[in-house]
Image (cartoon, rainbow, N blue to C red; front, side, top):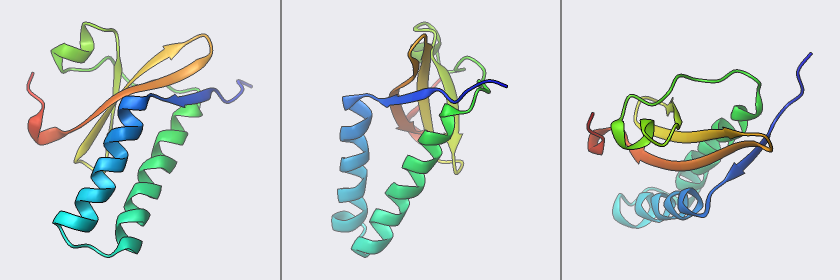
Length: 101
């Protein structure tokens, strides 16, 4: 049986998650509870990358050339991550609408 991997979230992704939470609260005028709940669901999803299964290389060129794998959260967000000996490093995230092949 394979053990769980360590998941490391890059500063870039941490900052983007914080910006998203602020956007949901301040620009979309969602309640603080709703914004935090969405952020929490994203973090739980990111933590699921500790499981030993890996996703395919990204189809988006800018991440594929770096050797990143991609995983989609709730059809709207893509997380790019790298598998390293220490575990998994979540390197970047983007809304699917701004990604181009």
